[in-house]
Image: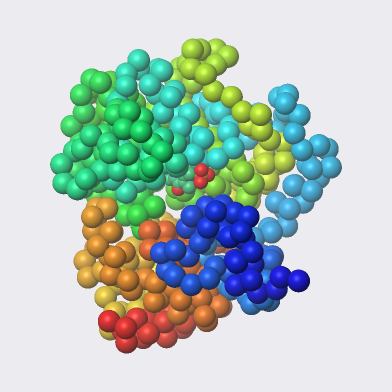
Length: 423
Ligand SMILES: *Cc1c(COP(=O)(O)O)cnc(C)c1O
């Protein structure tokens, strides 16, 4: 019988490319063998060797309540007993769309899909269809899933014509994608259909935009008639009850959601005003569809997760994140290792860098110094699972207790001493 992480990884690599179904899980950027999860509960995951980890991955933010949250599990169980997919509309899809619209002031209509990638891909098509324009502008280091148009890489410095970000993405697929740095408001022209932004960047570590930046993007889009897209697959229903619109006071034209809204099941959504969304089939000319879209089990999980996210929940998330941020900063810098531990609301980042991180070039320089991998393994050995890559953020959940956080901080001081020794 297969019992160890190493044995499972070896076996996985025979039937699955690289042994994983999403590359970051392979530990490529930190080295070593991934832990194979057997089960999880609240703040913890257990691997196949029976080791317990305090989990700060939490499915990259999908599990905001922690793992196997009882109301979510109960919703999944009772929904599954009534059938898992029908190919016909259901009441829960309506309830979830209403719930999303009631939280995010500018959202009037919602279309449900099955992943964040699908949400972003569809939102781009919608924006192009609605404006009749070609160009998509995005920021270097911002992640919008892995559809061809959005897998563009930018050079550094000035605005760039998109270069293909992956083998298999032909230059033609990104010919109308422009990648710009996150430290300046891009000057748009009237070929631009949409400007996409993570309102708080959370896929190049955590990088908050400078004050007024999102408002300036709004004004620039208005100047040329382009749509502003907030990719809130991470920030949605985490940064605040109403996401980045509530946090910043800036209203985009189109939103993408994912992660939190599925309660841990596959789910995404894109949203906008009734007028913009009327461009979608069956009302309008922009085609978009999905066999499992609005899935009855996923909508049950999402509704149960959102039902538990009241004002007190957000206060608690921020309180936990603040405790973690202060503790990590003190533990790491106390070991003589330069670190930046930014926090925006309940989102926490971690860079081994002397100066605050503003752009993807800054983030890359910090990621390339190798310190994250040493810290990561120091934490993992002590039973604390951070994401296996330097570009991910730290996801404390509502299940993390002060005891979990304080134990994390104690371990971080020891792991940081190992980083200091390795410098
Ligand atoms: C995770 C993420 C996506 C992609 O979502 P998937 O469900 O992994 O396809 C898109 N945008 C942002 C901001 C994300 O964090």
